[in-house]
Amino acid sequence: MERTKVIDLLRREDYGADVNVKGWVRTKRGSKAVNFVALNDGSTIKNVQIVVDVDKFDEAVIKNITTGACLSVDGVMVKSQGAEQSVEIQAKSIEILGLCGEDYPLQKKGHSMEFLREHANIRMRTNTFGAVFRIRHNMAMAIHTFFHEHGFFYWNSPLITASDCEGAGQMFQVTTLDIKNAPKTKEGDVDYSQDFFGAQTSLTVSGQLEGELAATALGAIYTFGPTFRAENSNTPRHLAEFWMIEPEVAFLDLKGLMDLEEEFIKYCVKWALDHCKDDLEFLNKMIDKSLIERLEGVLKEDFVRLPYTEGIKILEAAIAKGKKFEFPVSWGCDLASEHERYLVEEHFKKPVIMIDYPKEIKSFYMKINEDNKTVQGTDVLFPSIGEIIGGSVREESYEKLTNRMKELDMKLDGYEWYLETRKFGSCPHAGFGLGFERLILFVTGMTNIRDVIPFPRTPKNAAF
Ligand code: 4AD
Ligand code: MG
Image (spheres, helix red, strand yellow):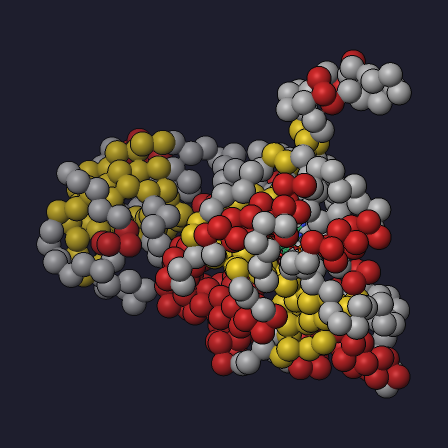
């Protein structure tokens, strides 16, 4: 018999029909005479209830219906007596596709997130992680749909690169040289001309620089791919391997950039509310009681657009009134997550797009304002997350850009291919990067970024 997915079955009303479902046992309860098996196949957070008249089956089959076992069930669809579901299956035959022993780690309900992280190979079988990963899929669909509808082209930047986008010292090197026995130059340095690519290469920290080239050809593009950072940040918001979405748009100015950032995030949040109702309701009940309210709140609010200098004044005023922060605040400092969260969660109580940062704390490519002190960078700050988007208008003047690079002691050679955009028909343009997992954190109410990516890569951890 053809298999019906649980999500489709639960919508049917043709009681009396013969059906087949396949899935994994979540729970088994009942009496000596009748067992109720909750079967889940991942298509939805909901289980289908299988009613098993014990004396109609071999003892061995009944014994092997254990938590985690994989079953194929033929039976009749009947209207359920229970309040929890409308449909259940009266089992006619049960095939045990995969036994599951007592050492299955998800025997009981209510494991800690830490425990589940250690069992990341099977944690997707829990309600929480099933919900998270269905939502993660939906957010990817929302992102592609948003950009497609807005005339952006999905475009792929390379993962292996010989240049550094965001600043030195945070990249994973890619090499086929024997590290114990690397060839040396006359000066005694590693001779990368003998390496696979004939140059020192790393995994990308951002696809932006290449994306900028594409924007000056295709007009509006976005990338959506893995990104790697070797920074030793062991926080609930940092991964060494994460996914980033980086749109880049020709002829976009600061106002247009902020509008795009705001419209884009709201579109994703609305998509979740429209497409992930069951999963969100579950997470709202089990993980964060204010989740749905917070998501709906974001849609209603206009994001605050706040120059950095104003932000510093607000923080200083708060300190004067007795607010305690761990890190000091003064003009020129890079804001810590506690400062960002104060602005968003306590002061404005809505998302903030902070702009016009001191150039010293931002990347070389950001457009310098007339004051020659600040740059047209935008960080979108979100409740409970902090920075969710980092973006900017790009410096399009060859002269200003190369001057800034020299000021920062950057070597221009290696960047010629990038700088040529500023020589061959340079255009005003802007773009941003959204951290995919930070979006998923916000939309799911999960609190640790390790719990919204299937297999997290963090310092000292690349298990699975
Ligand atoms: O602010 P970032 O470093 O900006 C860029 O990489 C720019 N090149 C983007 C652009 O303008 N095209 O990173 C962008 C976003 C951050 O706001 C954050 O959401 C996420 O990427 N992010 C991380 N997410 C998880 N783990 C990390 N280690 C992250 N670092 C950045
Ligand atoms: Mg940033």
